Image 1 (cartoon, rainbow, N blue to C red):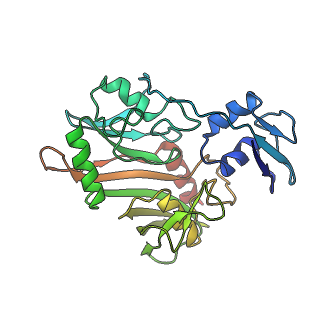
Image 2 (image 1 turned 90 degrees about the vertical axis):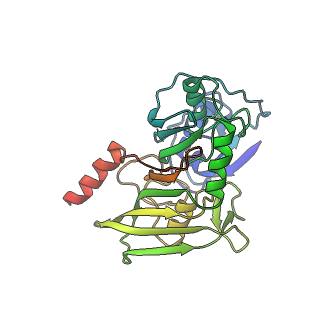
Length: 299
């Protein structure tokens, strides 16, 4: 049984999501409904507004062996051939099954689309998954359809040959037109569910440049040399410009009411695993992101 002492007022499901990164918001809402999550020893609703001093308990269940089931879930395919599949993942979709997310993931959708023709290197629940992006980060993901493609793409990522470009809206007005953040990232010593800048962490390098400045916000383009967990989110929060909507690393106001960070994997560039040809793909910003940028431009 896990216990948490609540230190701020918030919706119950949102507060638990900020404390327990292993569970999706959907999984948390289901657990609340099943009365596996209690407040002060009593069942309640996901919309319950927590009070400072509330004690939340989460019933820990035995881990269940996850089997990947092909599921007919619509996905936005940008490109496909015999070796690779490029998908523009929507915000809110988990890349592969895990604790609290047994299905309805990108891996489930891809398994149905490719009908078993995927690399097996990632194991039973991650077939074809070469790399991942966070649940609430939208954008481009590469899927390998065979082992040779998977090994080749993994090597390109390891050697920093895959160029990944993101778009983000951050709180605060950045003065520099462009900069590089070189700070190691590791597991937080204060909260093992979070990542943090740490002297004992692994090398993490993030480059960013300003695309537009608004009243209290900055729209930036980000390139990462390394692919540490939550790298962009941790780095931007560390220098004082957290990503809008980030419920884990921002802890600030969210006047736009977005759920999850405004971070989009917009561009990918790499060499085709079979032909060696340079491949470049782009995915436009989600509509909600575009609408918020337009509102800021009009101010």
